[in-house]
Amino acid sequence: MNLAAKSVTVDGRLHDVSLSLVPGTITAICGPNGAGKSTLLETLAGLLDTDAGEVMLGEDALRTLHPRERARRIGYLPQAHEIAWDVPVRSLVELGRMPHGDRLAGPVDVALATLDIAQLAERRAQSLSGGETARVLLARVLAGEPQWILADEPLAALDLSHQLSLMRYLRQAANTGTGVVLVLHDLAHAVNHADRIVVLDRGGLAAVGNPADALSEDIVARVWGVAGHWVGEQGYRAFIPH
Ligand SMILES: Nc1ncnc2c1ncn2[C@@H]1O[C@H](COP(=O)(O)OP(=O)(O)OP(=O)(O)O)[C@@H](O)[C@H]1O
Picture 1: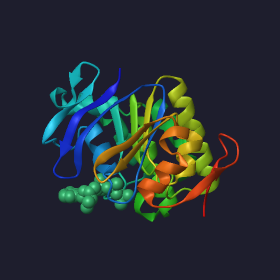
Picture 2 (picture 1 turned 90 degrees about the vertical axis):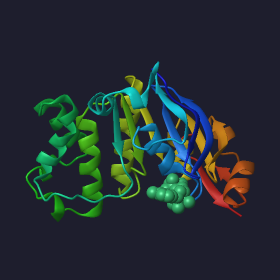
Picture 3 (picture 1 turned 180 degrees about the horizontal axis):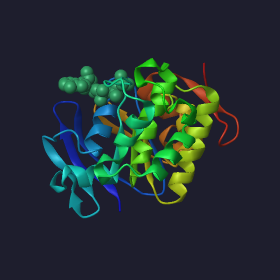
């Protein structure tokens, strides 16, 4: 079922934003600093109250779902990567099972393997590097096996190899029906990996569509103020500023 924002306005940070996201696809939310990307993602996760409008999951207004039900359906990875509790990595990833009320080993093991952190399972969470921490927090989201994965800059702290393996995993998840929504600063990542792009500018929608249209050179120049051109084949594009 679609995850949709209907005329959502949030506290001067989002203005009348409407869009409908489709499960089984990867959507990237892009835009300059302060454009409202994190605000939109948090709103779609049901974690921010709207001043006007509604977020819908299928036929249900998100705010009418019990928080546990909402958490079962929507996994959210915030931008800040801090771990408050110095527990073993495995215990932290198991917290992703909380909405299900279990600690099922299968999904936890899959999440640890997917993020390549099985070897860190017994380490104290606060002893990890930035990139390891990011992978552990993402593993916690995956362990909950949500229908929707909403992640704010999930690639930012990862090295090249882990970026590519995460994108491969997210593509697989999308292919089996999961909805994937990513805030991405790197426009090349967005163009190369997403099916659909949402461009935000000063709290409003600047473009929505397939990568070639929504991140055209004209739109990049207008929204980011950077003139340049795309080079390379689809899937391997790079943006070269003039
Ligand atoms: N808790 C808050 N209360 C009030 N304003 C906020 C709050 N959080 C963010 N803002 C403001 O709302 C606007 C949008 O912020 P948001 O974090 O959604 O932007 P963003 O596009 O994710 O930016 P960035 O690329 O810098 O992470 C910014 O002007 C920001 O200063």
